[in-house]
Each structure stands twice: as C-alpha cells, then as structure tokens.
Amino acid sequence: MPNLRTIVFFLLTAGFAGITHAAEPNVQTFARGLQTPWAIAFAPDGRVFLSERPGRIRVIEKDALAPEPWMRLEVIETGESGLLGLALDPAFEKNHYVYAAYTYRDAGGGMKNRLVRLRDEKGKGVLDRVLVDNAVGAQFHDGGRVKFGPDGKLYWSVGDAVGERSAQILSSLNGKILRLNADGSFPTDNPFPKSPVYSYGHRNPEGFAWQPKTGRFYATEHGPSGSPSCCHDEVNFIEPGKNYGWPVIYGGQAKDGMLPPVIESGANNTWAPGGAAFATRGPWAGSFLFTGLRGEALYRVVFDAKDPRKVAAFDTYFRGRFGRLRDIVEGPDGALYVLTSNRDGRGRPAAEDDRVLRITFK
Image 1 (spheres, rainbow, N blue to C red):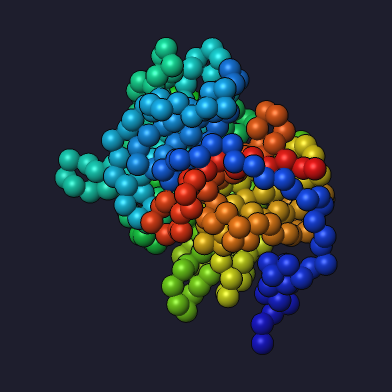
Image 2 (cartoon, rainbow, N blue to C red):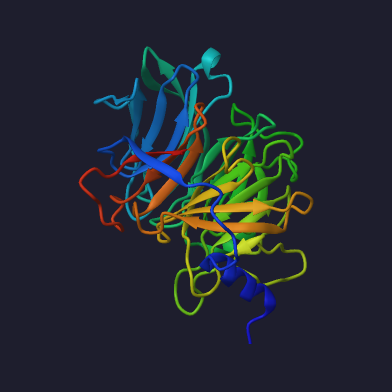
C-alpha cells in the first residue's frame, strides 16, 4: 500500500488538490528562431541575454534578436551538455560581468564542466577569467544553473555526470550546489572549510531560486528516469551543509542525516524540472514557479508561510501547449519569461521554435 505522503504528492501533481487557478495567464511570443536556449537574464540597460546550448550567447535589444551572437564559446553539445547557465553580475552597470557554465572536451578527450566570467566590451563578450574548472562532465546530468543569491554570492549547480557516488563525496564538485565569491574564491562562511560546496547529495539540479523577504532557498532536481526507479523529480528546500541523499535515497525515501524533498512527482509522473523563479508581482506573487521538460508544463507551488518544508498549494499550467519548457524568470516589467526547449533532440519543434514566451495576466 502507498503511504499517505505518496498519495498526497500524487493528488497534488495530478491537479486534484482542489486548487483553482489564481488568474488566467496570457501568453505571447517575445522572441523566436532560437536554438535550444537554456538560460535568460535581464540587463539593467534593457538588453536581454540568452544562452543557446550549441555555444552562443545571444542578445535581444529593443524587442529584436541581434543576428550575431554576443559571444561564442567552444562547447561539446551532446545529450544534455553544452552551454548551460548564464547570469549577470548584480553590479553589471559598473563591471559589465557575465557568468556562464558550459561543457567542453579537455585535451585528453574527456568531458568537463567549467564556470567562467565574461566581460561586455563594446557590445561583445570577451573572456575575463575561468572561475572553476575540471568538474566532471558527461552526456547527461551536467546540472548547470548559475545565479547570484540575495547574499551577493554566486551559486552553480553541478550534476553527478552519471557518476552517482560522486554526489556523496565532498571532495568532488559533482552532485553539488556550489557557492562562490564573484571572483571564484570560496566564501569563508561556506559550510565546509576551504570548499565551494554548499549542499550535496544531488542528482541533477537544474533550477533554483530564493523566496523574497525570507531568503529561503529552493532547488529543482531530476529524479531517476529508468525502470523501476522512475520518476521522483524533486523540489528541495536547500540548507547549507545538508545532504539531499542521492543516490542513497530519492523521492519520499528517508534516512538519518539525509533530507527528503519538500515535494516530489511520484513514481508514475515526471516533471523533468528545469529553471525556477519566485513571482513577486501579479496574481502569482509569492509563488515558486518551475518549468517542466518532459512534463511539458509550468508548475506553481505555494509554500506554507511558517513551515518552509510544507506545501500549501500546487498547480499545473500549459501542459503540452508549448512543448518542453527550460527556464523561467521574472522580467523587470513584472512579466514572466519562459524558454522553450523543443530543439534539444527530445522535443517536437514547431515552426517558430525555440521561443521566448512572455506571460502576463488579463
């Protein structure tokens, strides 16, 4: 018999929790003709930066996609690898720094992941420095999300690169969420001395965001995809130094010293979660939003105001309407911007794909 927790998760995920949509979203195409975009970030000067997995950083300016890339990076794009996360420095107006994570082929032919800092010079990108290098890469499970937290530190999620045991080895960069200073050095208040590791025991975390006002940190993570262990995708409440269990536990399983997710997709349903964001304006204000790749949907979670590990509401939008969804951010105009990922080899691309979708409310 399934336990109560599994039943509740199934009901929430299936949309039978008695939750009504807060408002009817209006969706328009903001940009089109992209090749597997992975991350989107807004600059204070009005430009919109996008990473494309084949190794291009693109710019949208005055609602038009520039025909030439802002920068090209030499990447290895296969399976889930390539140019992944992208973030702009909080002080971009002064220092013009852009941060990116990508997979590359090393001199010995192996796959690696690195985090770099780039610089905007006269409207084009140049390499400033390599911040972190030699994280093991693979065709699958490269993680890749890059964001600045409210503490001003730079966070980078790195998947297990199909090397499950590495997630439990603190000396490995894989299966971790890393926390860095903007120059790549390790903050002295990290949970493990002289280490960039912030949390560990992760399989393939591809999205994270901080709750406004509280600063609570949540991350999405892909669960195992093969039989009999499918699917158990997760949303985790991230705390410094904590172990999230992979590969020892996953989904709703429990073990001393390891934290289960706040919510999981269950054994018979998959989200394949991508990017995440908290909405701060409009009818979804306060909601944690994350995209689904295989789930082909946008998911909305409302956390309990007092208990960060308790879900008060869960809802699903756009299932199958736009195909695979990769990233979501709230723009400076208050609209939500979502990337499709239908040209990643697993989708069914429409004529305009891939696109940036802009979500507003009537």
